[in-house]
Image 1 (cartoon, rainbow, N blue to C red):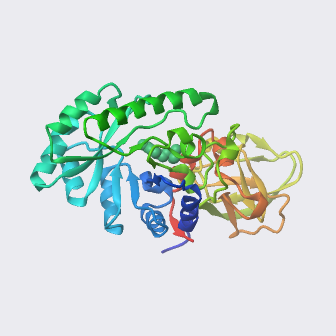
Image 2 (image 1 turned 180 degrees about the vertical axis):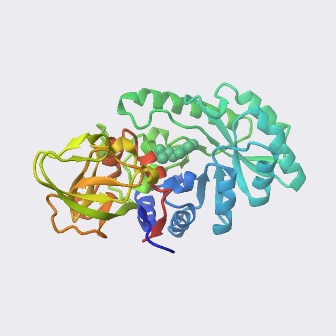
Image 3 (image 1 turned 60 degrees about the vertical axis):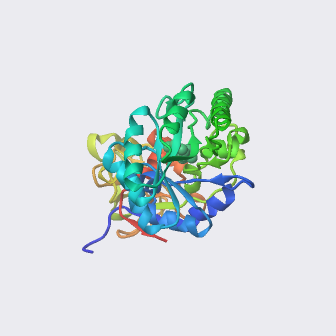
Length: 372
Ligand SMILES: *Cc1c(COP(=O)(O)O)cnc(C)c1O
């Protein structure tokens, strides 16, 4: 490699594996949600670390992600949450043993055709919409699904899924209960006509806060990556302590002393009111360090917090290092994580950013990554 990586992401797959072990509930199973490149942490190393501690079921988004994972984990169950879009998706599911969600009636011919060509059953998961109005059959449409399954004995349903809209909001527990009731009814109606299937509804928030929504398989995502899905709510303490798996740093390019009255960065939105030492960090919105963080975020430099001064630029951001005078060009600033008490949590960074840790991980995770 020539030169340095500006923004550098460090990922600890072991931390994800540790969180997996902490989140487990006796007598039920978990599907590890590793969609979107394991929330920006890196699909293959994360899935391999999870497999080493016993994970057997993995949920990706697209079939293409599933194909990538198959090579690394020949024996795992791989589920494509977004389902299939066309014949080539269906064929890939058959050839790579990926279990697609069937989410609407237009997909029956595709999965039937793929199964028929293989002359062996194709495993599928039935997805119902119980209140998210995103993917899935209407929750009243069980009869239609049963009819389609009966007409296609080459399809082997292996589970029934639905997804919660409000699991991370203690104020909206009644809607979780309603969705739980609907999935319970769907599961019972399927069982009554001979399709006895494990059901799955719980994401991370429901896994830690809504035992009634656990069913047989849970699908944790964000909690595996160390973020408390109930952070900042009255139910924050329901989540066991988790370890964050991602740290993000960038090098300091220049350090300078500025006098009172000097303005920093575009638009002169920050003006020093006292003598200050500032550092210019090689991270900006081109590295997914959002311009929305201007004048809001902080980094960690030399073990202490260094507030962002003025506007975040395309590849640079100025921070206040007055309280850390020994800083030199070449030292690294932490954008996420960092040593000890000063560490920046995903929740904090997300709050400054006006978003959620999910987006922080996915976006920063697109920078070059190193495993630790
Ligand atoms: C992303 C996703 C999950 C995981 O949700 P978290 O909130 O990250 O735990 C579970 N199920 C489905 C269908 C998803 O899309």
